[in-house]
Amino acid sequence: MALDHYVSQVHLKNFYAPELGEAFYASRKQAVRIFPQSSSNVCRIEQGSTNEYLLEDRAIEEVLKTVEPYYNESVAQLENDSITRESVYVIACFVSYILTCSPAAMRIQSQPLKAAVEETSKIAELIEKLPVSPPSLGGKSLSELIDSDEIRVEIDPKYPQAIGITRILSSTNVFGNSCWEILHNPFPESPFFTSDFPVCIERSKDPRVLNRIIPLTPFLAVRILPDIEIDRESPDFNFNKFRRRIKKLNRRQIAAINQGIVRCAESMIFSQTNSSWVSRFIERNANYRIETFTRKTPSGRGTLMLSSQRIAEYRHAST
Image (tube, rainbow, N blue to C red; front, side, top):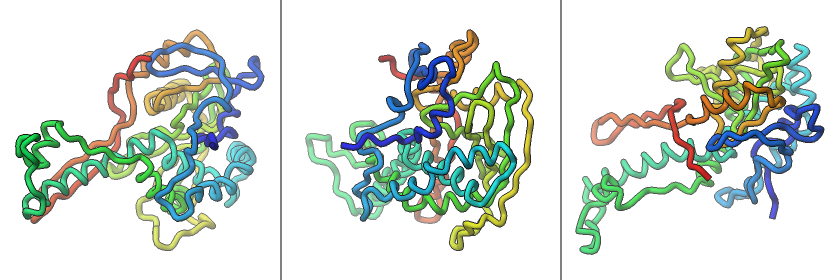
């Protein structure tokens, strides 16, 4: 059985600590303790890239063949401001892959589907399409059972993953035709972290849009400001609408990005350094993660549902 990495090893290896050789410093969010770890032992799931909802259950592997062999070269081009169409594609597709196939992504994307199933059950009851429950369940309606938590709707996380895989090139098109900020970190004592979900979210000026910040190396990151006006029906993989600006960050900005990386991580943080400030910094920001919230508004005979993501407090279970 294949052990598939949902965060590519080529990304993780860029965060190796020179004094450790083939390893970086890792920490779990639920019990902050720094320990050396290799990229080959983290961010992997048995058959994680296999999805039986698709006609080709390993379809994502064909996409990764167009990304992983060219990842380091693409990162170098961003760092040197020699960006090509190919490097834009590689980084945009890498981001889309994380937002599709990682456990955090599947959890996050399951929530709108769960809300839709629950709302559909209520509508079905209103038009008398569902019988009441048997006496063993008190003769309650399905919506009453759901509201009382006697029945819970659970979404197979592979289903939103399948949806994401079918849309991965569409997401790549949007990200690649948006504005990027190439973020340089000039402080070797304060490197960027990475994580098991290295795509942190950030509010933008437009409430409909979330910026994405992705650490690429300990001293380089990219902020993607998605353009929601991009034509999804006619993708442009020449990325004619791509724009970029270069920013040299100060210490406060670096700390804010690292805070976002830690808070958005699902369960693990990886660092090139084990300086004294690292464990304290992670501990202060560990009890958060990305959550999806769905707002329901009556609309005619149905309900309009709008889902949004934000960083929320969360107590990680102890192990």
